[in-house]
Amino acid sequence: MTSDLLQQFIPVFFVTLIVFGLFFLFMGVGYIVKKQPLKGSCGGVANLMGDEYCQFCGNDPNKCESQVADSKNLSDKAAKLGKQI
Image 1 (cartoon, rainbow, N blue to C red):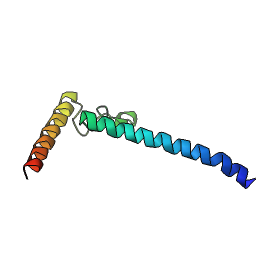
Image 2 (cartoon, rainbow, N blue to C red):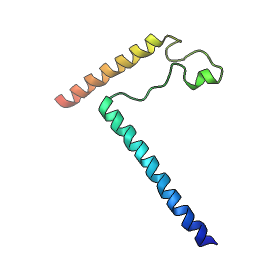
Image 3 (cartoon, rainbow, N blue to C red):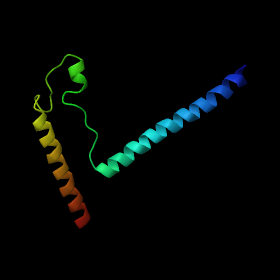
Image 4 (cartoon, one colour):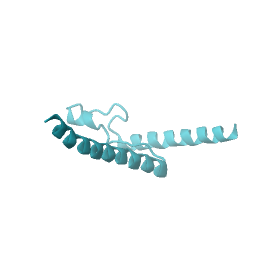
């Protein structure tokens, strides 16, 4: 009984592990290629929970985009400084 359960569990476990591994691998490759972090919609889950005010941009999507651009500029400058040292 136990060995039958174990024989069924092990293949499912490894298939699941491989699927999750591929998922994280492709996310990593996508990040390396695009050089942009993952981002959600303005407000994200907070909108679903009833909080309609975005704490990051104040419900102004243009401000969210400018913050992403500013952070990219800062990271580019940091990368250049790191290469100079």
